[in-house]
Length: 544
Image 1 (cartoon, rainbow, N blue to C red):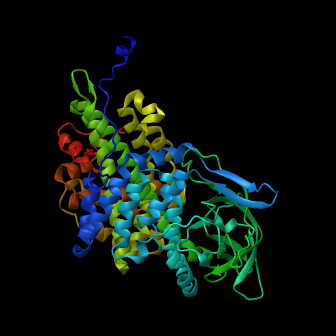
Image 2 (image 1 turned 90 degrees about the vertical axis):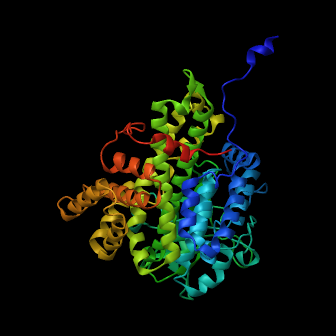
């Protein structure tokens, strides 16, 4: 009899057992737009299969378990020998293996590789964002290694392999390898020129012995790391393997793991180098120039990761409101809730569209596209990652109290949401990087203006925003103080241009009205009532 009081009604079914890729119209359309026609059938099948994997109950459970069981540091074995190993929950290894086999480190080795990988990375982030870190750094290490053809020939096949080999042994004995990165030190943070880790040259002229401390070293169980250290010729990029060719462990002393707000499944460590063997990558004193392409690639992954988190947050919110009834009808049909959901959907689609456009520029690799990336990547990294946190918080609120409960999965998205704005250079670093591009590389601004100009004349609000942007650029007085404002406008104008060209008219209209035409408020859910909000929400609805 008592059991009858626990009948469950008016609760949405779990959003599980569906294809995350095919259910995301903004993403599928972007892939169709940017890939060569002869690749489409293959890539559609590949991404749909990954989308079904991401939406499966089993893989979603792996993500939850990896997050709930953070890594543990083991500095010594039972006999007192120093081993410096990190233990992960089995779900972490299952996820990482799936990510590698899905090609998330193989972009450089496949046609259309950056677009197909970007779409896959955006999907995979929605399962569990933590394992994106080693996948991202392994992918991004390739352009840095290419500054040294011998190193690239040795390591690139391992990094682009679609085989995950978790064992710590010499990389030459492995079918696949993962890379990490160590730049940040206590005294400098983003100012890596202040690094004090010392690189003492060994007699062969190409290898060094390192002494120093890295304040942040992510994925410390990777097979090798790119690090910055002070050599006699200045700040230099070096490759540090975990295991040397003879099978001995390279001194890589893990002092502790960081206790982070989110990203808990991924290990972030403080490490000491004490007589650690390293090989130079590029020339002495050119460390920043050598590693900058790696940083740019990881920054694009920050944009993709945030776009993935945003998409999952919006999918959960729309799904909940589609099934939940309140005040005599479905929440999704209530005008005010529909306004909120449409506003969230706009932000998510703009992020996805911009991220895939930048991935396509990597595949093109022409001079014009490289120039566009120089200004668009830091601008996108600044803006998209900053929009992620307010979006995930608002999406959680759409679920009411349920969204504040761990079982909903929304708190994990909220905790993860600030990360991409902080890592790989926080907001001020990105804004100042945009200024450097504007001041030193005229081709970057020209490429940007040509890109946004492709939609000129199609919407008066975009035309006005471009005009206002040019006015801002013409006034260099106090430009550093205005760097954030300028970077925000660069990102918004680029998003608006892309949506006008590629999104349905109701999406582009709503975006331009609220983001470029100042007909929107400071919070989500303040879109003009004259817009076709139902169509915007319907477009974002996941079909389970």
